[in-house]
Length: 184
Image (tube, rainbow, N blue to C red; front, side, top):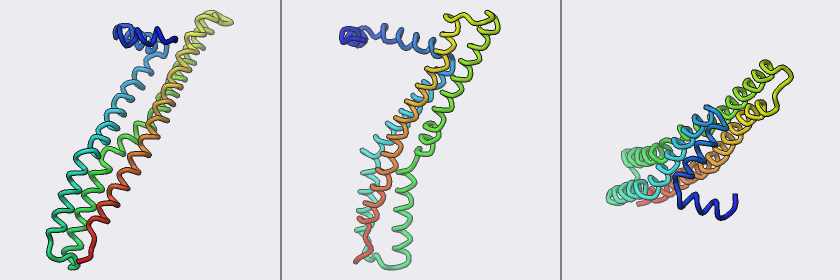
């Protein structure tokens, strides 16, 4: 694909939609499942980044202000309140991360399912045509390889962002723990 073709994809969105449709047809029905999984995965990833950008900052500011407004920080009750604030922040920071991890793990399995269905199609062509029609077998091989590639691309990119989000959640909760110091 040259620069001019890429330019026209942005100028003419119908051509881009046709390209996606053609890609989905080449990869078979499983590729549609991978695409839906990808949209859900990236929606959850974007939600987490948006949460850390705004809502988590407000939450930690509210907890820090509440903690600093307390007259004492050493009693048993103060320790429990601090633990509750940190636990709540940790739960909210890690929300949806388990769903993201499941979708990342699911993507390569969906790709493998596409491989199996594509290879079944190849064997069906071989059974019908005898020794095998190369053109018909190529369609099945395409349906076998494209979902595998798509599933791996989704999983690898999702894995990178999952790790990034986990680190961000841990770092943010540790920063809150430091802000809610126990010294008077």
